Length: 313
Image (cartoon, rainbow, N blue to C red; front, side, top):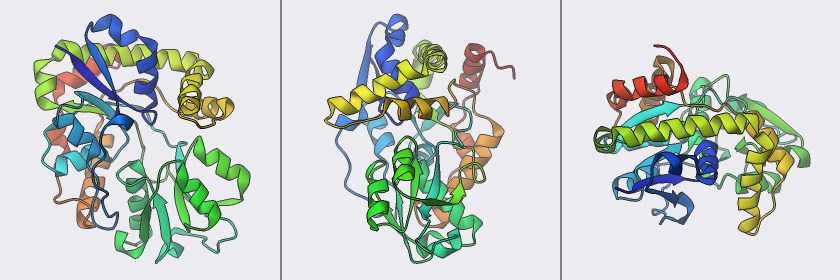
């Protein structure tokens, strides 16, 4: 049986694993699926809903296993997809923040009422923006959300096309170098923002050995990233260059050094954050319904992650 693993640069762990050959040593028949090459769904109005790209391909045969940021599994569950969590990383609180130009006159999140806020809609950035608004006593309808690419958002902020932007490293570093920015809210004050991995319930239950092999390979590859951040950064730079762009090896190395690596079992605190996000997204009209995120927890998967990570229950 061919095991299809979806990957893209935004999930650093899977992107490096794709290039290391570790999983192939454990699973003889692996197919790597570049998410950037798959058909994209019709655009979703960021004022009215969330795209479900990742779960769509997980259930239409595009791939069997995927790693993303915070929001996609909540979106999948709300759209009736029978996913299960596999694991999470440690907190990525240094990865990004909500910023505005220092000379914009925007000093707090409250000043964003009626303003254009750039996000990569459907990613963790949507959750960060919504958490920030809720903390300030605002709702999604109080801003004009603008769906921007992770990289294009910074340029739009500098041009004045956006009033604020949820930026992430390494792209945020270039904007910091080009303009004085004001941090409206950081990530740490809102949520833990881990990387996470999930799959279909039927795949997990029917392919336990394969899923355990993927967890093992991720742990081994992530240990290599921690020991070799500059060599790992080169994979990302090479990918950008191959696509006709430019990238800084130093910036990518700094970004990787600031991120946690290693797969951990889902925690109660993480599930509480996911539930809070699901409830807020539904209340603000971005999901068709709210969900119970703990329905996506399978105990034996947590045990497998603990066994591979050395974490005790």
